[in-house]
Amino acid sequence: MEKKKKDWYKVKKYPHIGLPLKANDRHKWIQKYVTSAEEVSKHSFLPFIHKTSKVRRFRKEYDPNYGLLNKVTVNGKNSSRKSSSKKRELYYASHLDSLIFSYYSKLLIDCYEKKLDENNLSEVVNAYRTVAINNLEADGPNKCNINFADDVFQYIKSFPHEKFVVIAFDIKSFFDNLNHAKLRDAWMKVMEVDELPPDHFNVYKNITRFSYVDIVDIF
Image (cartoon, rainbow, N blue to C red; front, side):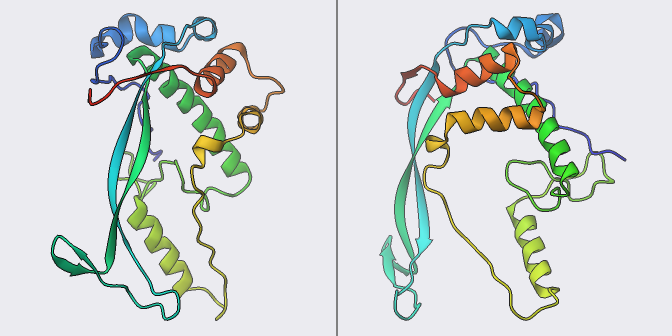
């Protein structure tokens, strides 16, 4: 049984330039418009709405010499976690634009999944993918970070050798510093084309060279 795929059509409720779309508009005009390569190739995307969100996070701290946890005080209590905040830059597309992005994301994901299958990487890559816990259940749940972590631990336990190497790292501001030319090349590669079609190029152009309006505390 094939896993049921997520629907690209999701009506957003946040305020933006123009009126919100209605769910029943999908079959009246929206789906026909969004899935038309000709319409999307000449579509004029609206500016994003931008806001900065601060997210609090708590991380364990270790002594650089002994690996012991440094005790810190959080809300009057001893804790091994240090409180800090991280800024997240959020950009909200207009309601129609968000549906176009969602639909083209689906098109690219389908091509990407095909590439993973062809290169025997479906069981390796998990970032930004929908991976079912059980492929035999069409409406079954998908894996979360806990499931992926458990897969790793189970693999380590069953590894036939005593020594192996694990690499853990984080790339700071990865998406903020993507090389747009390489992004375009990867886009063409998964689609197996030598040049982006006009509709795909219009979408690509408007996620790499976009304008935005700053709004404070609107959401």
